[in-house]
Image 1 (cartoon, rainbow, N blue to C red):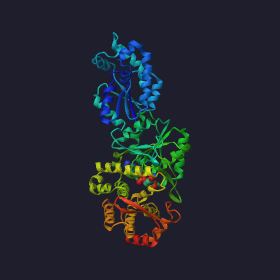
Image 2: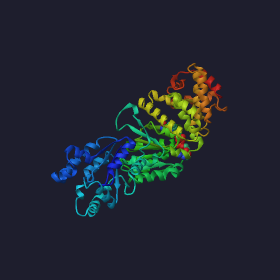
Image 3: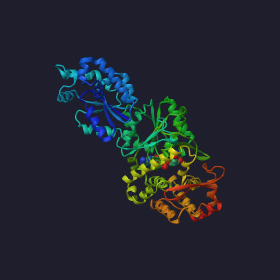
Image 4: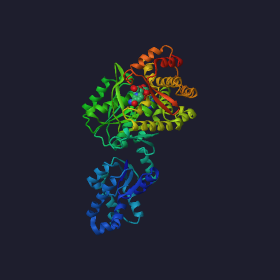
Length: 533
Ligand SMILES: NC(=O)c1ccc[n+]([C@@H]2O[C@H](COP(=O)([O-])OP(=O)(O)OC[C@H]3O[C@@H](n4cnc5c(N)ncnc54)[C@H](O)[C@@H]3O)[C@@H](O)[C@H]2O)c1
């Protein structure tokens, strides 16, 4: 994103812009500096010799050129906002921040820089400042937000902007299918406090209207924060709250969401925000996919599972009476904003279920991640920096896999490690006994055992996988009441099973897996018995 600083002379645009550039690593440009460079003359001299009209035309050209760059901090000359074309061009290029300053402070600051400001070379500069400010304030107020720089230091102003725009957070780029197109690519913002930056990031997408979809549990915890962050950027969100629970991820509530959007006359340039766990993310993403054939969706995942898995990659959908996640679409979000602070309120059991998915990434892709999860268990459980680190790594892995294979026609299937048995367990227990991550945890152990049985994996590595899963308090064994036959039947009915051929994602070592088809029922049954069933 570009950050465009507007405001009157002496408001601190250059100083704050330079400081922001130092903190963020973005490059810094000043429209006045470019004009001076192009003309080889000072601003006051250009004004004197060639007049204000000439200067403004040149300024407009410079604004157009700079706005086409990315990740720059642009300090604009005091009069840039007078031209509505400049405003439009800048709005399309990033977030506009008005540095607002009181007239007396402006006078003090401009006098101390040697009277280089041509507009203030008058007898009563304070009167002139007041007059100009009166004219220009309505123009500056077209900015997306403002900060008052009258009584704060340059460093404080820069930090405030960083916080508001969540500039300090980590960013993972997702290029689904490996396509490098602005329209298809999106960013995952990860960090503590990123929710503060949500309003700015959404405003940058210039939606006509915004709806926040959530459930009462999550909305009570984070709804205010999200809505006020949006309001700070002039966005008045519509609130759509659906009941909390997997059973509401259905066609009735999907229809309700669509109805709300229609009755509020959401158009094709509007946007929905999914604030919640995987249930909210899936149903909201699907509503976005089909509303007017697709409007933008911003995922704000609030469970660990949603942060490391469901919010990234574009799988959206709802359940049908006859099967879970049976109706859906691949529909990528426009942005994912994840704030680890929200995990503080997550029940421990939900945290563990999310950790199962992170362990999965370690087994299928990254031995180092697996070892980190082993080594840093205490800090991960305490929701400390190690948890933040493994969340970022999981998102990177998911982004890498989705870049290779957006629609699960090949590589992406490895993300289903543990899911063949996991889904069967969920189905047979009516989705009530296990959380998804718990069922996957058992499934991962069974898949590791099957891999040993097929001589693809050493016993010690399978033991390490089971040991890690168990050390996080996750279940590792098939419950006694479910027989191998029941599980095999349930697996055959799974939507991922094509032509009755069971597919397993089997580890070949920690950090790599293979997709294996045609495993005999005998071997599956034998393994299931060993794994406890
Ligand atoms: N789209 C995908 O790629 C994908 C991948 C995996 C799972 N899923 C789907 O995700 C769903 C499961 O998601 P989930 O595990 O996040 O469950 P969930 O969305 O039901 O959330 C679990 C519970 O935690 C509460 N909650 C959420 N955030 C909270 C917070 N910060 N503090 C306190 N409570 C909070 C919720 O209200 C809910 O009661 C399933 O429907 C599954 O099918 C989708």
